[in-house]
Length: 294
Image (tube, rainbow, N blue to C red; front, side, top):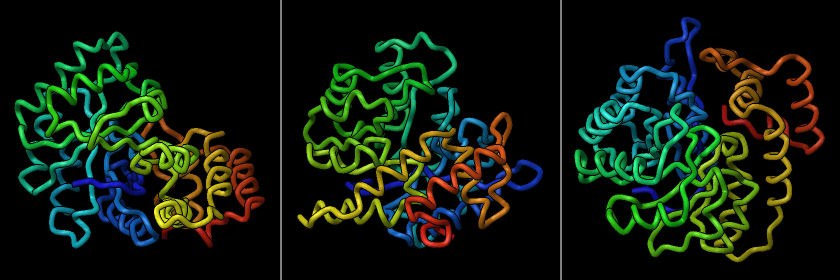
């Protein structure tokens, strides 16, 4: 079961034919953990989950089920279909996975509190042992969780709705629920969040800021002076100037050409943007050789 900590929304790696490179995807996640992360989420939005077939997701789940780091592996679903969500969840639970990061269905932008409540309640009815981390990201789903909407879900399903990844940032300062894990979706809010009781972060960029983010987390918990938070925020702010998936793949591809493969319509940064990204990070003394999980 997920606990407080630093987690990444891990990248997916693809072959030249646009199929999921399962071995490389797992190896990247393992490397990130070895650099300091408490765990990783496969098939979040940064992992292009909405573009990956359900069969490929099942193949990866089958592979990580016997991995020695299994307890540090977590799953998003990245699916709009209610039935496919249930299918993937039930398949995963057969291998012992119970924690899932689940976003409300995207595309239809008229989601309501009632409709979203129904979506999660049906999933829980069909998979009663599931533990759900709500994914609050209005930019992608067209729906923003309110404090009241989350509170209603937790009250109805206290054993199932255990936390929230807040990438809309309207909850982490305002939602106060006992035994409920709140993870702001950016390192820029990591320390501020920890100070008000948040659990850590689930972030796209922690797969390159891994050791730095972990130091901020550990120093907070050990009541040490913060020496890395300013740099951590500055690095994240650099990546935030670009499409995160494009920037992260462009950055990782400096070491591993496999990361050059993206699923359309996503593309890498153009040459000017890539040069600009590298220069900005170098000016912060944040270079690929020192910081990348490879």
